[in-house]
Image 1 (cartoon, rainbow, N blue to C red):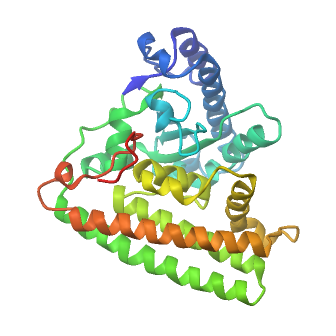
Image 2 (image 1 turned 180 degrees about the horizontal axis):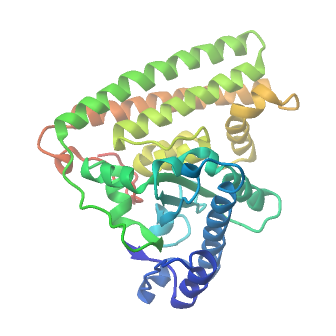
Length: 346
């Protein structure tokens, strides 16, 4: 793995975040990947994760839910491969994708990370202390090493290509093993057979609700359709998808491994961006907030785009299943999580 932070940045983080034997490997030649303002922003993000994780362990908790540690903090995705305009994400806007590795499975539970999630969103949208969206996933060191032993493509790529922001000595990552192609194909097929029919069912419910004038229900079911399509696509292509209902993040991950999906959601108009934003918010707001509104025009546009997503994702996954042979993952063309430049599926 590469190291992002310069010597001074590393000293600041070492002192501020983890005086308990944290290590920040410094490779000055790597600093060109991100401009100084983004390095400083990542420092703030790291501090938030550490601070809020510590706060989440305070209070009247059983002993087994105290003493959790962040062992590794790894930046992956486009920002780990260098910064240039248009290279970050499908819409040209950079996002920070982080893998947080904790000491035990207990501390990977979402309840220990709700505070961090809320604060990162607040600093992005309210206080504006952050200018870049942050997505993070949490796994225990044991789970991460188990995934590497199994040769899971997502974790193998993060371990190989990610940038270490924080590393605690004494917790090495194991050497990845080759992915068993027969096991992988069977698992890919199970994911395809589960997620895509489920998405089709929710799509029909959305169209029925729309036809009967239940706009909020239609928006929620469209959200569920898209969520299932992205989870299915990611699990077929990488055998992993983040445990999230956030469509923007799922879209980012899916478009990274299958760039053909970028064209599904136009970003060239305010209307298109507004429609997707309302769809993303529908998971919570369409069910619980009376102020949530969505128009006939927006729903009709979304139905058309969801249909395109359904067809494109199914074609990508079917092609992957058809082409996944028994000679190994290289021949099978398992997608990497890193950015591609040709925008073509293989």
